[in-house]
Length: 317
Image (tube, one colour):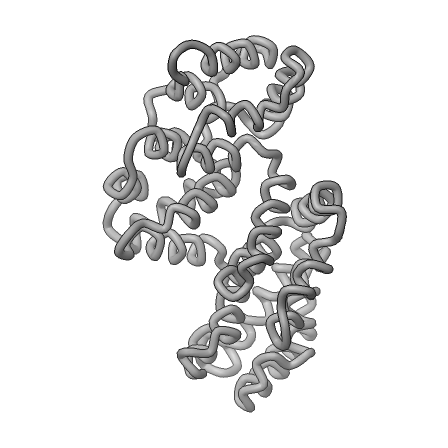
């Protein structure tokens, strides 16, 4: 469930565009006005505002925002204002340039989006960067990471609920054998993770637990704790089966570590506010005994804090 709050009586795109232009004029930028508009518009409404702003004022709204804002607040506003596919393309492109620290971001985009959302991200990547996401991922990664990540970002999964229980039993057995032999990057394991529907993968891992007496993630914990590929493999499985738990782990790490990881915090809030941030927040509170909004306000300040709180649906608008 989404946390985004959109008023039942939203002004027209031209009115919003005029108001945003007003926010940029005068002696200082009116950040509160920007938040009150953009943080309470759906992706489709934000798209129309951008189009109208360009038609009326002859300038890209994103460039106007970039000129007027700064720091983490600017990053949150810009990511939020992008269309979802554009945003994912940008996040993926940034991740390819820092691949050793950003494998999780590439995997996250590939595994927590629907097939259509991932397709839109790939199309936006083509349009913006004049090459494919698969090309960049392959260029910037090596070995087992390349095998897994290229397969994941290339995926187009069946989205339905139908599952083949015979296949689930066979593939649960295969995966168990590969894990027992520590062949974590086996081509068959990667094939299953990158091609099967999420419903089929869940059926396979449920069968794995029934047949072998422990969850798949528990089995993978027995590997080398410093193995970065194994860490990525565990996160891949979590994103495909229980994405809200993955996002809670990312948020907890981002907020609780010494020095907030604003990049991760901004990414999660802006990409999930229209999808399942309410579910993520409920799970965060259950596991950490503090509401996500309170955890964020303890670690953030100023307009950046206001923007995140608005996307969490916790402001007064």
